[in-house]
Image 1 (cartoon, one colour):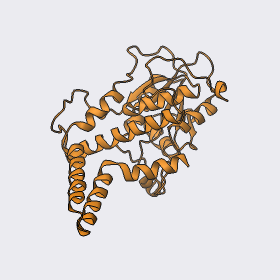
Image 2: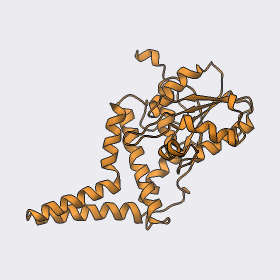
Image 3: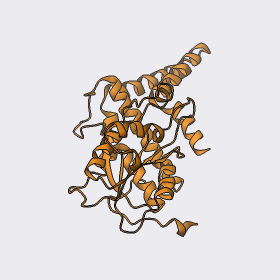
Image 4: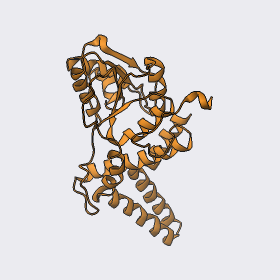
Amino acid sequence: MFHLFSAIFWALAQPLSLSALLLALSLMLFVVNWRRLALAAGCMSLLILVASAWTTAGALLLHPLEERFAQPDEMPSRVDGIVVLGGGFEGTINLARGGYELNSSGDRFVETAILARRFPRARIVVSGGSGSVFLAGEGDADTAPRLLTALGVARERIEIENESRDTFENARFSRRMVDPRPGEVWLLVTSAFHMPRAVGAFRQIGFPVVPWPADYKTSGREWPGPAEDNALDSLRNMSVAIREWIALATYFLAGRTPTLLPERDAPLHDPRESG
């Protein structure tokens, strides 16, 4: 239910959808001769669209998320396992064509392949079922072995967790699968903007991980003003930023992460204390 509600809510609340809904509302209000309200709704629709597509607002909202965690300054001397979270494949296309088409977050899996070569004894866990609600799609954990083996990772090293539909389930089901032992070093690979929520979820269920962010959407040097990217990239940044901030707040209120923005170094939550 949580997953279904979030999918429906976001389908309506993302900037482009919200702008279109406000424009439709403006037209309806104009038809019934409520012209002041119609003008207000139309102006709000235009403001959302302009701010999202032609300013750096989206990038600025992403900065605190992408800067929260960085890759370690020194490469770990030993890595026991790598968990990569799904979200990097075009599930609908891959289900139909059987390939491994990547989306804008596909760098997660490229980075995982690089790490797998650096740490040849590390277990590789791909976590992510199909999170699609409205379209049928292949889960990333089912697609990833085709790409990773093509990039030189031995198939027997790859472990699949394909039940999870969201970040908290990624953490819970991955922990259940690998049963990490004290002292083991596990890397967590996901998009930089997504890392705070992912780290919070893994900490909440008691799975110690070393954040290894990939897939940055910004340079970190953007200033307030006109967009430096094209309109589609700026719109994407705004959509990603708003969605992630809303998701962080929801996870915090639902007890899925201990803090709104997890600290860089924080003690683990023991799930037995709340159960």
